[in-house]
Length: 311
Ligand code: ACO
Image (tube, rainbow, N blue to C red):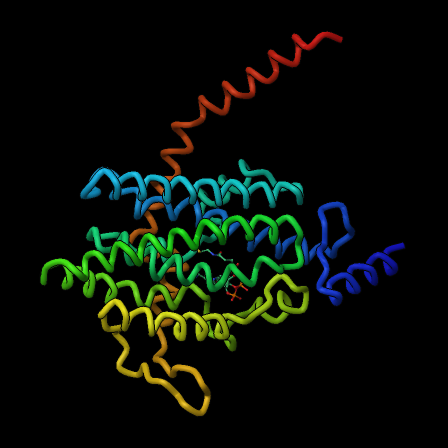
């Protein structure tokens, strides 16, 4: 029956319909979905660290409550996404162990430090802005549980992006020092934000197959272009300069031309040599180790309760 199931799978993908957990799927499709969703989940969880570091230093109760809510949302996103991988038979425990062992990736962006309070705003504006650009199309990804998780995640990401932009707007209306802090932060985050979309299409080994399967619906370069075009007018409204001398509107293309990030730096960060890679994984490992007793207690509790269930 395999050729028939394979034909069904192909037809579902071609109709842009969803593949569901119990449907037949090629092994390589399953592996690719697990790889992408696991990386995505890890990014949400590791992504709590740079901003989490500022919760205790937020300048007002309102800013603190907002940042706390935002960082908690990221934890929730990680959990929805790990649940999506569980529908393919891969547990959160296994994925976390792979992450800690350095065998799975997470987004390069979270290996850069948040050095000033302006970075909380810039991460919301540029990093969550880039995340939205990449993730809105993923609401229509071919794997059902992933696409449905994305719908909720994107709504929350929009709130994150707005809070970042509003924070930067407030600082830009403040003192010269505050404006300089915002510009310095944007200068540091602009190129790493462009790198979030992944390598250029001609250096992206997975794009072609992932597009054919409907896992990805746009290429890395298409989404990077969309992000630049979306961000330029926002930067103008904010009054900051994007640090790219080659950034210019191209009338003919109806889009901005822009410079390339330093791709050697990107691969160094992806391979583990970014400014914060070691720190991020060490922190995650500490939290996982220190939480072991909670996991053990939960299992013991579940087992004990099972025994008490009347026959
Ligand atoms: N950071 C770390 N690794 C990356 C990045 C990045 N920004 N971009 C690409 N890579 C890795 C890929 O995972 C792949 O490695 P692998 O084959 O070992 O898994 C390799 O570089 C080559 O890249 P591609 O062939 O282009 O990989 P892919 O088709 O998976 O595209 C992309 C990468 C665009 C990131 C895709 O996986 C995706 O859309 N993921 C979902 C979104 C996501 O993970 N967002 C997380 C950050 S946003 C947030 O959490 C706020």
